[in-house]
Image (cartoon, rainbow, N blue to C red; front, side):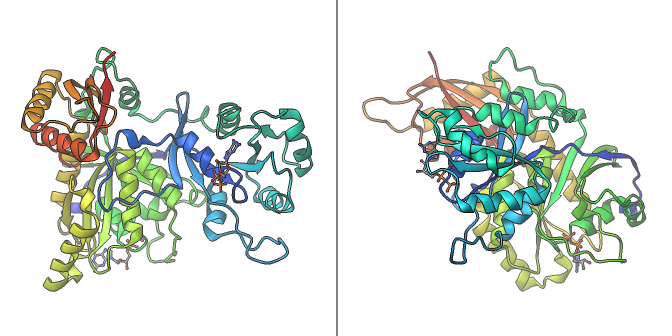
Length: 470
Ligand code: GDP
Ligand code: GDP
């Protein structure tokens, strides 16, 4: 099969963002801390109908160091007598996959029996645990923390999630040794640009020469490993599946039609041929790490099954991280014409917010539809790294405003003056003007559509930031 004819050169461990998991009983302030750490990107992203946002997973950043934050939502004691029941399955899995755990307690309530039980579980997990005593604003930190030493989890960090006291220091300690050893991922420059928004600071690299970092994601059984096998050639996939690498992700480099790709591969993708059909449990964390480490995501859906909540969640992550996206509906060979119509309608209905992405129908098993799929992956990558000129952006903005003004807010009408590009992957468009604080989502989407049309930005999310001129 011609699809099997391309070679791959090297593979190396992928650098994933470290995972910090927040654990603690209900009401200690986990979601408050989560919100502080992730400072949601809502201000840049419009809310789309049908978009599923999972507020338990997000990206945080301390200085230059990005990391993934997971809020486990607490250990619910289901049994009586305050005895903690089995940890929720998700919590167990998150703890298992954590690079560092922040164990939150409540400095106002003091140490409880439930805290002791959680501490015991965490000690046994063998993972790095930081003990945080929360809500200590206005209290003596030393006094608030004193009784928590007995948990035997080291020095308690007295913090206030609500006010921010002590939070940065604590997270820096949590990340110590995790980020220093991690060489920066190679699209650094792009990431750096995404942070800088001054026009002078922005000088786009010629990203088209960049390797496409591709993450293939989707529910278990949609056909991810089959596709990887089809792309790389089965024997190769098996050959490099060495023992001891199961926990780590690796990057696999391969070439197709003169284009170089880096496949961000998680252990879940490397099944051991037919020898043992490992039933991998689905890992949100690994999926999110792979998405974060990529610049293009291939979301796989299964034509023979309904589009599920889980599919929508994964899609929501992609939108939030801003990675370029291509959708493949797999197992097309198994769907009769009725089913084919049905799944397309379902896609329209449930994943409408992915309308920026190209959708392909494929059969990973038979190698059907793979060529066009890779073409779309390439063009999504190109769109994600497109250079948008300031004059053209500004003209597009002005034409849009002429067609439809932003709605008045009180006595002020927002004035949109000019626009420039502030970043890539995803493209960030910074719109300057005055009274821009309350531009509604509907208007943001209207502008997005205009920008997309003008610059033909298919396959990538687009961010718009409104900035009031001083
Ligand atoms: P979770 O159940 O652990 O996620 O806890 P939440 O984040 O929902 O917080 C529970 C309550 O504690 C809320 O009323 C928060 O406003 C409050 N809270 C959280 N952090 C702090 C803090 O640092 N100081 C004070 N005083 N209250 C806090
Ligand atoms: P993963 O869990 O997403 O990696 O899924 P697998 O690649 O292990 O595929 C799950 C099952 O679906 C396997 O039995 C595959 O042979 C089957 N499968 C994968 N792709 C196709 C396809 O295009 N058509 C059909 N009919 N079956 C497929």
